[in-house]
Image 1 (tube, rainbow, N blue to C red):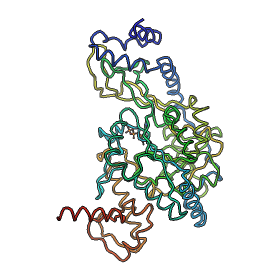
Image 2: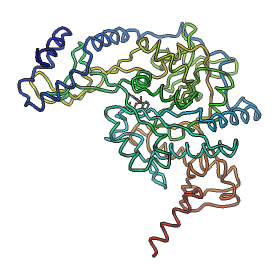
Image 3: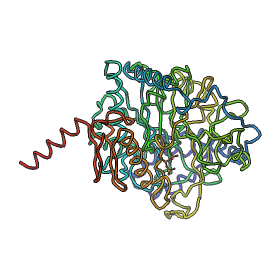
Image 4: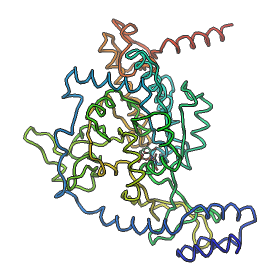
Length: 491
Ligand code: UTP
């Protein structure tokens, strides 16, 4: 049987034969590409996923209020309530683990950034800081700085492997960008890019959509695709070989993210948990973020749409929101736990369905760019493993210092390039003021991540200084490079 015949048979059995509707219009090369793509898709599994996802649509609309409880007090730590000694000891321990090479960072960079609306990966976006640095550069430089802090504290320069999860749409561009920029000073050996999986997009009846006459419409399988991607790409094995015990996982779009945060890592290690989640306190009952709580006794993120107004507004005796632990996609995992998920629980992860506008080829062979949702994408979410945790904590941090997400274009006026830049510069201004400097209103002063991770190491440069014009406070290394370049230009 030819490969076309055998694929036709599979498609017939799975009621997806329409995918071959335009096969006789393809030239040899186009047909070859198409058959190659079709042969990589496990249609029986994909159909089963659609059925499971369809069932979860009706579950999604159920409100969970009656089954929800806040996380127990022992599981909730916070920067605000911890003592100075505790914070110092968490930081010291986190830096020790870093200096021993036990810590890796895993960056979630497989999203398509549709709301931001750029055609390249979000990590390559520059929000317009005086330095022009992109999100990728800021994050890589924070890794370099925290390695130096670990060396200062413990005498050994450890290593942090930067695992970057990309997807079909972001992989090649991300790799090229990192290579072109020399991995922003990180060792190439310690930057590992790997791809998450893709899933077909469906119409509402379960028929898979064609993006072109010879191309199935595929989309990344959500940030929860991390768990299968870790084992399919042998990343867990790589972690084991390198002696990595703890992984800090975060989204690409939080400009304030403390990458490999030693305090968070030290806290989770001290509490001997297998998973931890950083949270920020919801800014009010109506903020549309997921909250971490318990549902039927299990740790879980409950989306804003899954609770009633009444529950969102519940307050305790001190007037604080009962469900206020806003999830910010910033997690700690032990590698042992990641292995357990990959081995035992991945197939049980919940499937989320998003109704989307999916460009496709219609029955007449015309390319359609829909103006309203015409189909569904199936996604897994990273936080859906919380229910499988036996030892889990949350760590509440200040939004002002740690969370400002880049989700939208500026027209949205929220979680956009304008707010990301504003929030970073506002934080830097607060660091400068803490050490006796002043920044005039409207003046932009940026602190390089290579100079300072969280406000340390700047006193000499800012004390009793008034900043009246745009300034970038640079590390020694950057200063030298700048001077060299200036000299070159002069001569
Ligand atoms: P979001 O859910 O905000 O999605 O991702 P997004 O792709 O950035 O933006 P929209 O929704 O298309 O506008 C949160 C984090 O999860 C990653 C993103 O890259 C981001 O860091 N992500 C999302 C993945 O790694 N893979 C995915 O399939 C989806």
